[in-house]
Length: 228
Image (cartoon, rainbow, N blue to C red):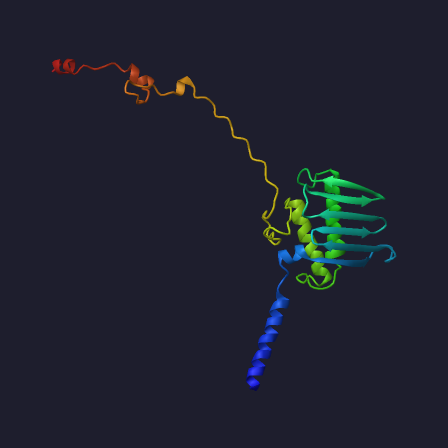
């Protein structure tokens, strides 16, 4: 009896450990709702604070960073076109994704996207406490936001609460990605007269004789025999 109780206790402990050891799924990340604040000491001997505030309600994300000034990003992951609403210096502007952002990009959209990712990384992922794999920990909540932001803005994935979940851990495009523009078919050049194969009477085509074969003199077999 004691051995049975001990076995059940071990199995129960192992099941709890297995659940704790699993990372949150892509569906859990999208459907989650939470808010968290990450505080970190800034420059000037810590007198200037760097506060990162994140509020998530399923598809709706608000990211607020406060250093010297305050900037706010409002994002709807389930809405297209790919865009963000940025409130900076007291005014709000909407920036749409036109092209992929590179190091040489100078658009306002790419500027604020780079600033957003920097804030999430430098003031969120670095200073957040807890485990990255647990949505109940601040570190896991920030990591979930980072995965969603990268998918939405970099790979143009529009999320949905009703379609098949998008794999956040895959680098490939998946889910409700916007359709790519199809390449227009190339025009086929018309066949020149010099390349055409002449047709014979029965409709079949024979290869054209080379210049040397056509100019080669015909040799009469009877003439060759009279020489002997």
